[in-house]
Length: 124
Image (cartoon, rainbow, N blue to C red):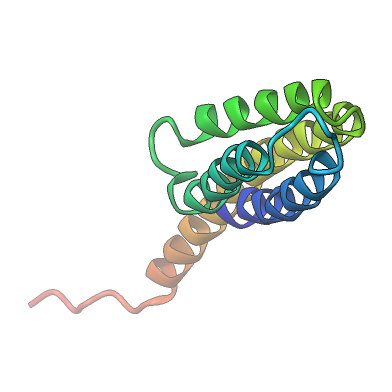
């Protein structure tokens, strides 16, 4: 799950940076405000890559997705891109858990078959 979620977050990192460049063209927004908000969001993307498997990591990821969609009020294209990344986030979490479960089942089966294949010690 971690790999899929981290890949989604890295993609978001770049999208947030590009959205900040677009937002800077708005004369009503100060460049310092745009880069402060975008920088915090970009940092959160990178930080979440490391804590996504810890308790609360997925919930923080969902909060980031909601914030990304809400950024559409500043850069309207972000409504669409935020929805796309929210769908990718869902898929990363959903299918990542399925992959983790399959890996655990495979490891358990491998351990069982290795135990069954090993010769039993002779009783004296």
